[in-house]
Amino acid sequence: MSETNTASKPEMKYVSAEEMERQFYAILVKEGMKEDKAATCAKVFTENSVDGVYTHGVNRFPRFVQYIKDKHVVTDAEPVLKGTFGAVEQWDGQSGPGITNALFCTERVKEIARKSGIGCVAIGNTNHWMRGGTYGWQAAKDGFAFICWTNTIANMPSWGAKDNRLGNNPLIFAVPFEEEAIVLDMAMSQFSFGKIELMKMQGEALPVAGGFDKSGQLSTDPVAITESGLLLPIGYWKGSGLSLLLDILAAILSGGLATNEISKLPAEINVSQVFIAIDLSKLHNTSAIRQALQNVIEDYKSAVPAEGKSVRYPGEGVVKTRKENLKKGIPVNVQVWNEILSL
Image 1: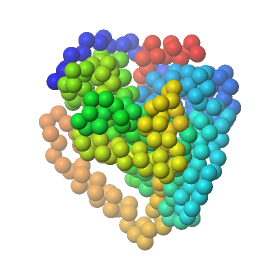
Image 2 (image 1 turned 120 degrees about the vertical axis):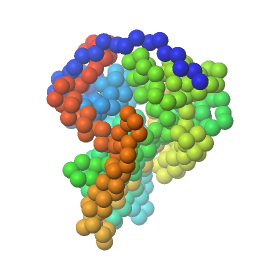
Image 3 (image 1 turned 90 degrees about the vertical axis):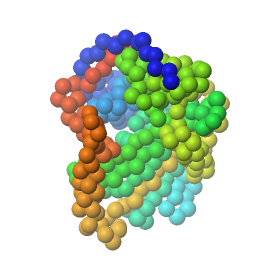
Image 4 (image 1 turned 60 degrees about the vertical axis):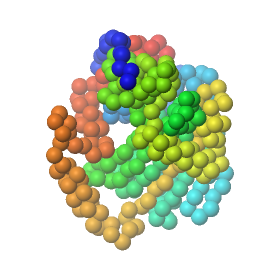
C-alpha cells in the first residue's frame, strides 16, 4: 500500500463567521448575483465552514465564483416545473446555483409531505449543491425524515476497473433528534475528493486507504490518489453498485442527465438530484418517536469504545465543531483566504 506524503502543513488563520459571510456576499453581488440569492449562498457557504465542512464551504468558494464567471452557473435562473404525478414532481434547475435550487427542492418536498405524508422532488440540469447535509439538517430540524442524493461526473472506478465510470454520488439520510438531528452525509467513495484535497493541503495521510495510486495499489497518500484520480468505493463492490443505482435513479426520476452524460460536459454541471421527505407527524406512532430515538442512541453510545476511539452517531461531531468555530473563529488556509479576498 502506498503511504508516502511529503506535503508541508499550510499556514492557517481564524476568520469569524460574520466576516466570512460578509466577504462572500460582497463577492457574489459583484459577480452579478441578485442580493437575496447572494445572501443565501453566502450564508450556506459560511454555515458549511462553521460546521467544519471546509471542503464545501470556504475552500470551495473560489471554484464556485469561477463557475459563475465561466457561465456554468446562471445566477438569476429559477427552477421550472416539468411534470407532476401523485406526490412526485420533476423540475428543471435551469443551470441555476446548486445551493438555491437544492433549498427550493427541500422546501417544496416538505410542502408535498405535509399534504401527502411523503413527497419526492427530483431536479435535473442543476449545479453542485455543496454540502448535501445542509438540506438534511434543515428538513430534520423541521420534523421530517429526509433522504436526498445527487449524481456527479465520473470520478470513481467501478470495482475491478482501472478507470472512472461512476460518480461518488453523495447520499444523505436525516432524522430529527432532540434539538438537533442525526445526519448521515456520505459519498460513495471512502473519502470525498474535497476531503482528499483538504488532507493534501494539510500535508496529512488518510487514516485508511482512500484510493489507488498510478500503479493500482491502495493508498493513504492524498497526493498519489489525486494524481491517479482513482477513489476507492465504500465497501468495494457494494459501494460501486450503490453508486450506479443512485445515478440511475437520479437520472430517471429527474428526467435529467446521468454520470456518463455529465462527464462529457466542460465541467461538473447539469447534475441530477432527488429529495424525499416524510412528515413524521403523520405517523400513528409519532408521539413515541422521540423516546424511541433516545433509546436507540443511548444503546448505541453505550458500546465500549476501542482504544483511542470514541463512539459518535452521524452528525454528533458537527454540533461540537459548530460551537467551537463560532467561539474561536473558522480555521482557514491563509492562501485560500487571500485568494478569496482577491476576488
